[in-house]
Amino acid sequence: MNTATVSQPVSIDLFCRVIDNLGDIGVCWRLARQLAARPEVAQLRLWVDDLHSFARIQAEVQSDQHTQLLHGVTIEHWHPERLDYPAPHSFVIEAFACEPPEAMTRQLNADGHVWINLDYLSAEPWVQGCHGLPSPQAGGANKYFFFPGFVPQTGGLLRETDLLARRDAFQQDDAAYQAMLQGLGVAQEHIHALLQGEMQQMFLFCYPDAPVLALPQVLATLEQKTLLLVPESVAQRIPELAQGQLLVQRIPAVNQAEFDALLWRSALNIVRGEDSLVRAIWAGQPMLWQPYVQEEQAHLDKLQAWLDTGNLPEPVQALHLAWSSADQAGAATALNLCLEPQVLHLWQQEARAYSEKLAEQADLASSLLSFYTQVARKR
Image (cartoon, rainbow, N blue to C red; front, side):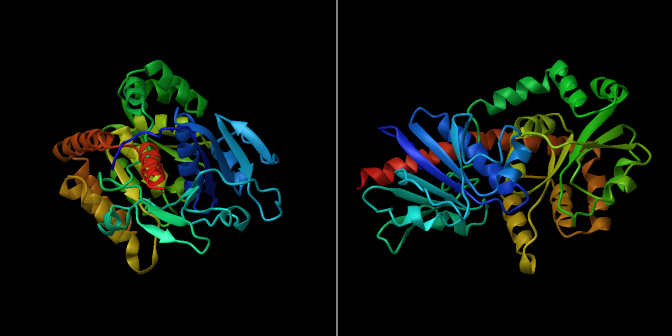
């Protein structure tokens, strides 16, 4: 991907429908803030149809406001009754084929606009061939397919420029870590045990079909105690998990910065969906990913394609496949192997190396601006 910079400041419309467990707005909010902070961007409007869900990950969002400005982003409430749609900006990004309002898309043309469908994240090989292809629209504009991804032939991953430096600093800052845990309601005795290395922190964020009962089978028998942090809305069978050396702590909803910090200090991050996968990658810690379940087991193909981009030990790959197949016995067996010292050390090394390798590629916001410049120059 050409990394040419935008020659003149560009204004952007970014459209988002909240559908998939906050994942859609999670991705779009991170992207909106990153783009708005760039000197190449004059203005960014984020159009969101569900402000109530948005407010769950960003408490400052006012769900009754038609228009509001937050972190340099103009947030517009996008709803069926709205009639006062403005003229579209020159760069239009629709997230995940959400179909922006016709009142705006009918004004788009190839001479004055660059229109992108920002697709879902996938490591499947076909993505590289489709990335950047135009799709002619009825009004004469081209809509371009744009795929985030794990290789340079795609649009890259969401990553703030200072993210890894902030991660490394937080991993060494026990005072900030202690303050975060206190804010989550963790008992002082547990905080002390975590800081002294007498207990390890793990994080669980999974879909309802995850074989969570595999966790106590393994973690309850470890020599070291484990504090498993679990968001309130996740794993309703959680009371069954706490036993032996495994302690469970329900935590309230957190904003995106706090979510990242949770991952940075966890010995194992169990995550789901697209946004959480990427944030767990940047944490550089051992992680277990569960993609969203699809028909005909298509999510397992997606999972395997992602596993193929790294070099995870065989037991870790087996754990991923068992976890996403709702195979409790298989997940327990694989997790037990993964936590053996030799395998765990390799897992830790690969997690860090994978994070560093992907950080060498252009990030998604930079790739989008570069693509805009390339298309605009051809007009």
